[in-house]
Image (cartoon, rainbow over all chains, first blue to last red; front, side):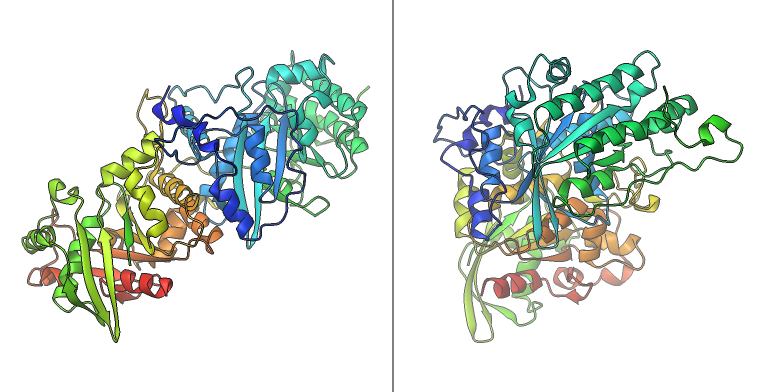
Length: 331
Length: 282
């Protein structure tokens, strides 16, 4: 275990971290939810060690940390709902890495989980270079430190994104109705629920039907648990869009079902967003990667207009006819 | 007034201190002049001797935890300026082990301001710019970011592998976490002579930071109220000694070779970052 992680709990002792206190002193807007909205979450078990003062940002946050942060500054709790390996970690990583590009319309304003983001970015860069990358931050059973923090600023407006993904096992248990959604505080508290369809699965004829089924199962669970609750928002995100777009068969399969699924999502929430994201696409991928649109939706005030949806694919005239047809409902 | 020098190894902290001392002693600091030297300046004298020989400061000299403690006059105003030069290795060790250095922690709430040092040629390799995978979508392809993150094949990730801009953000947000009032910050981009020599026309330091150190630039902009800042390009040596100075510089004294470029590209004296800090704290 690297030395830096040995003190991860120590910084939580003694009430809100100074950054929160300072944010509050700056007149930050009150939190959108009550600070005890995570009441099911276990409190931090930090023990005092007066000999050292740890630096900020070494580890992921637990719900108690997140609650403290939201008590001093406005924020959004974002939860990715998707299968294992469906691209959730890549979405998280890319939201951070994108801030490194010049010309961003929202600025990076800090992160209490800077090191965790950097570890993700390092792994992605190693993987891009062909080297074996270390495993992404694994979700350990019983470990509630699974929340990334990214503060973004649009002029004087500051927004804290608290990003968590539901472990794949939990997603399956939810889909299979072995676990009620209401039993998961993160989901209950979420401001932004993101239903993920794994574009990689869509490419596999043996798994694509299952991927759609899982999404619909989750929609049913959401509906039966009266989610999203007022004030929270829903989005349908197709990840690994490059894998879908570059394969005519996969694209045809998806286009024939996309609108129906999106309509089903909008039945649950009329304003639900629908984004195609190619967060891990290679440099040669010619389309927008969708990360900017996703980020706009994540930071947007509920009800506000976000970026326009990504453009539909313009097929050349010599493309097979079935691909140029508008979507149709399959029976 | 106490100004903290923040920077990891070889980011130009000691070189600036030596050049600043040379400029002050030799009346090349504009309106600012020395009233009294309070502390031992043997380290600074040795540094000036090295610059006179066109030699960079030796490592044993730069990590000696020296300081510049002087009384300065600016018009009618006399201020005592204390600029301790802490070892860059200590700062690196602190960021890597995630535990505050007690002395640095004690300085945070007492300091009137700070100078944060970054090396231009470390943050944006100027000769062999290795571009990362082209970003899709929002950013034009010619604005892709340079790779600044160290790669160590087979190494498990650790904080030591963070790129310099993230480490700077890491340090600043940890400092803000320990300080309740604003911290005026002069960002010093050292080795500016290399930027000037290789980019034509040279960007202003503010433009350069926005283009090459985007994460830090965004962080500073987003936290401007708590981190009022100005960005300076500094060449303490005036050029690269190992490559040989340009002919027109060979006969110049070290304090005439060294230069500072202000936030908007204007050439200024070595004292301008200190003057900016003095203004920002009053």
